[in-house]
Length: 356
Image (spheres, rainbow, N blue to C red):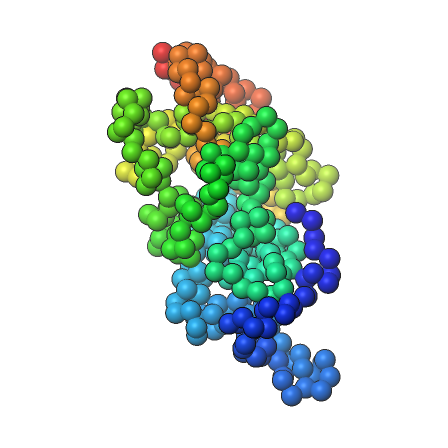
């Protein structure tokens, strides 16, 4: 997403001045000195981003939403941090990895303002529409500004040769499935977006019992196994030296593997897996050999692609496109060109016997 021009980032529009927030004084949210006669005096103790402290800035008017958001994965990024911690084999992140996380990862966290009035800092900010506040975040300027490279591209059909998600074609936006409650809260101890009982499920809208194929595959296959199209997979991303960088472009692909997050909420034997961009030396510039427990988590991870289609090759012809077709399953052969650590990491998700 291109950076906004300077005049777009600071614009306060006429309609904002007549809105609920616009009727408040600037200092109500931003502090400062209203009596100041110069810019320097007026900006004394200015708070540029009030919702960086949402309890103080937002909850005075909005109940406890700010406090709830502070515990959400959007705010804490606990999922990312926990993944690094587990791979490092540490009880808590080392000082060097904490510094790396703050420098390279923390800018992706969102505040209330970065969803409801400005674009996220990770895309250089700027007001969405003249300082106006919106109850519903803008799907393009807010949601896919952060979640665009995979989710956004899949959902809107930006990947070459791949159709947009059927829900997008029906006019759905992110909030049609992802509720306010889900986005503002987190389950105690949640370390993944999937650790949320409020997360959407296909069955919330679709009755699986009405279809004979669904009945046969219930609890065996996730919905995406039959109804996802090819999706983006990334390889060999390093956060360190520029010359290391991303050493391999993303690739479109589709892989079915064993369910690494099997539970009562996710009972399926087989699910779609996405390759994530990490390698054993990803953080070596910050802390050499930090990921001593690299194989503790697979690099082919549970995924729910946002490119759903009723009639996919898998759904149209099970026999030729899925059963007896090793190409769509993650097998040991797919790991042959990977490091020994990465091969070890994925032993729990590869498929040994292709369904006939």
